[in-house]
Length: 225
Ligand SMILES: *[C@@H]1O[C@H](CO)[C@@H](O)[C@H](O)[C@H]1NC(C)=O
Ligand SMILES: *[C@@H]1O[C@H](CO)[C@@H](O)[C@H](O)[C@H]1NC(C)=O
Ligand SMILES: *[C@@H]1O[C@H](CO)[C@@H](O)[C@H](O)[C@H]1NC(C)=O
Image (cartoon, rainbow, N blue to C red; front, side, top):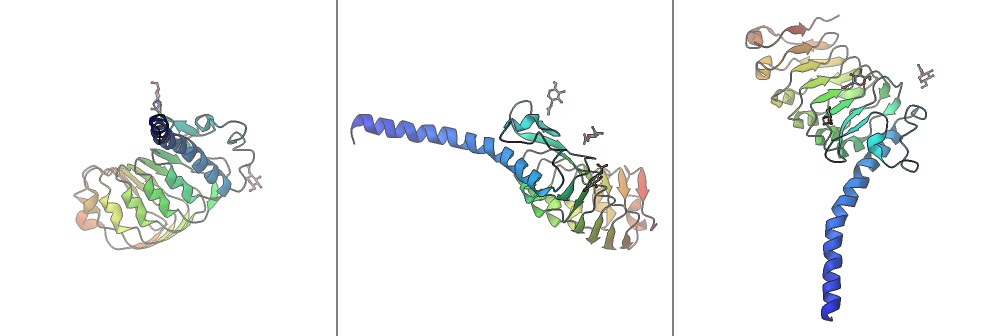
């Protein structure tokens, strides 16, 4: 190769290396949002402006909040929009998500395992839907999580014992589901926990021995009804 050609090739490669990660992350989050929309089934009116053809600035779409410093989606709030359908596994591609609020819809299906990829989540509120299946173990990968609100769904199976590995959980509300099995030993939740709602499930086991260790707890609701 001539010197000029080499230089050109080199520049081209450098340019591609610089541009590629940028463009793919640009389309990546927008694409993920479009997949999230596609798995809802009556979003036509509610998510009218989620339209990558008319407006590819997904940060301006309803319910989407981007970071002030980048085009990363940090919050998604689609609460009370009467959405049905399912939560797409593509939610896990929104890696910078800190808050996910989908409460008060009619979402069915399972909570996707991929939710565990949203490692920055501090709030996960999927309450008042029709979600079923197990609470995925992957939730315990959300090490920043402070509020886990899954009440009023049809979730079954045990409370994952690995939930106790999330150090910052302040609010756990799993009330009115169909959860079975033992209540994990509360002692692991230490003094950070402020609210624990478990009522309206089929849980067994006792709370008493560990209760005194929960110095921060101000609300506990575990009755069967
Ligand atoms: C962006 O900046 C505004 C004003 O400073 C602030 O109120 C808002 O919380 C910031 N948003 C995010 C997502 O950081
Ligand atoms: C989502 O939006 C609703 C309605 O505006 C609001 O009441 C709610 O607090 C928001 N959720 C979060 C997590 O900010
Ligand atoms: C919610 O969506 C259903 C269709 O899935 C529709 O029949 C119902 O009227 C909607 N309710 C409201 C309050 O928009």
